[in-house]
Length: 148
Image 1 (cartoon, rainbow, N blue to C red):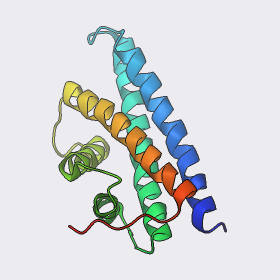
Image 2: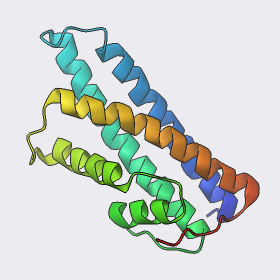
Image 3: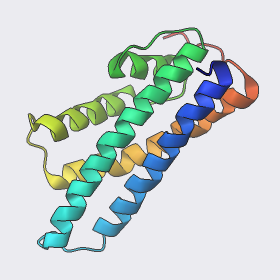
Image 4: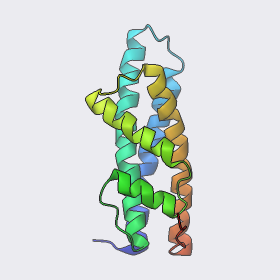
């Protein structure tokens, strides 16, 4: 099993791919009418790709946190570590994204399709920023911890 920088680099690869796939689906759905059958199928694809991206993103946070000497055994602790290290800026949005991911799986919150799409689009951008910041770790080495 790889350790250190190699492990962080390996965690970036599927995250980048999942982010690209979600972006492709979001681009396609923008060109469809919400009442069409194609829109419905594309929405389902977006939701699934968002779920996959969320999983890869929090696991990237976990691996990067471990590289920094911290533990992040689940999504919420990983988000907290991402905030601590400055890899993410908006903890509230990430918590909302986690809730949206959970809602997509369990439909507890009854979010509208438009609400999901807004969160998914913003999340793809947030993950793009996250990947750039964590990618710098593999070039620069461990980053200092922000105290919050």
